[in-house]
Length: 229
Image (cartoon, rainbow, N blue to C red; front, side, top):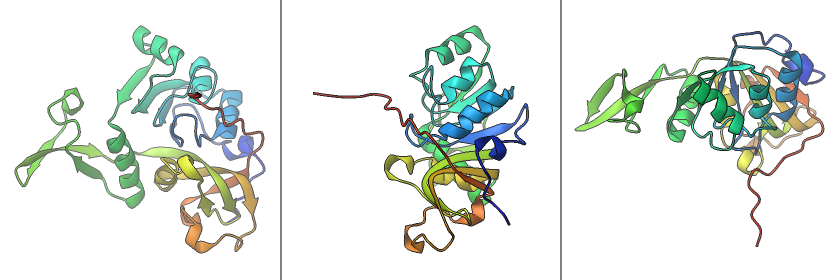
C-alpha cells in the first residue's frame, strides 16, 4: 500500500462537508498545522471536531472556527479562544465538554475495537444526563461510547514510508490514541525517512494504523502560554 502523499492538500482531498474529524495535539503542541491550513483553504463546512482543545483565535482549530467550518466541538478544554466563546454563547456552535481522561479513553476504545467504556468521571453531574450507568463492586460508573471518526489527523516528529510514527515530548499526548481510532488516519511529520530506518523500539504508532503520510513544512510551533521570570 502506497501511503506517502505529496502534501497536506492531497492528504485531505476526500474530507467533505459534514465529516467527523479527530485532531491530535495538546494546547498548541503537536497539532497538525499543515492539515488544518489545508482544511481552511478547502473550505469544508459542518465539521464535527474531536480535539483536546479548540486552539486559539488565530491558530490551530481557531482558524477553522473563524471561517465557520465547525458545526460541533467535542473537547475537554476550550478556555483560550474568544471566537469559540462567542459562537458558543450565540448558539452558532454545538459543544460537548468531556473530562480529559474520558476523552482520551474513548479515543483508545475506538482504536482497540471496543464499543464502550465505563468510567466514574461524570457520575452524578450534568455529564451523566441521559446516559446509562452501572454499579461495579458497589461503585457507580457511567457508560461512554467509543468515538466514531471518519478521519484522524495527527502530527508526529518522525515517520517512515510505511507509516510508523515517533512522537516527541508533549506531542505524544492525544496523537497516538487518535492515530489508532480514525477510519482513515492522516499523519504529517517533520521528517519522513525510508522504511527500516526507525528503531523498532522507539516507534509509538505502528504503520498498520496509518493510511496517508507526508512531510510537512513551515511549522510555527507557537507557544500558547509563555512564562518568563
